[in-house]
Length: 102
Image 1 (cartoon, rainbow, N blue to C red):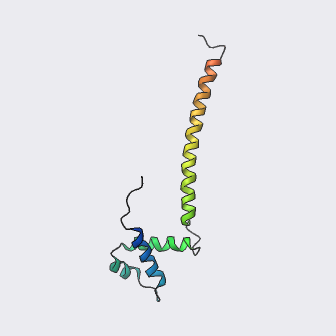
Image 2 (cartoon, rainbow, N blue to C red; image 1 turned 90 degrees about the horizontal axis):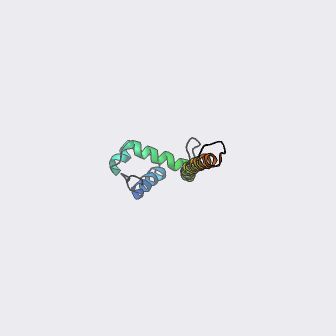
Image 3 (cartoon, rainbow, N blue to C red; image 1 turned 60 degrees about the vertical axis):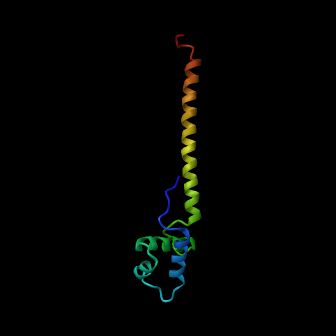
């Protein structure tokens, strides 16, 4: 279960929209004082927004992040399944071994 977010999604979207639509661009520090958020939080939201819009190549988009998380969960499940199969295979191989004393 994910930890609760400190700032609501509505506030995040509003803050990013305010920054991106303002001309000239406001100083992040001044905007964060008005909104009551941490400057680094707003910087991260802006970076992620730009990545999602295809304006940045150095970060994953939100869709790519979701896909990566799903693939990592699938890898964990597959590793678990492989371990179960490996253990079962060793067990049945030992049961069928004619040289093993009973």
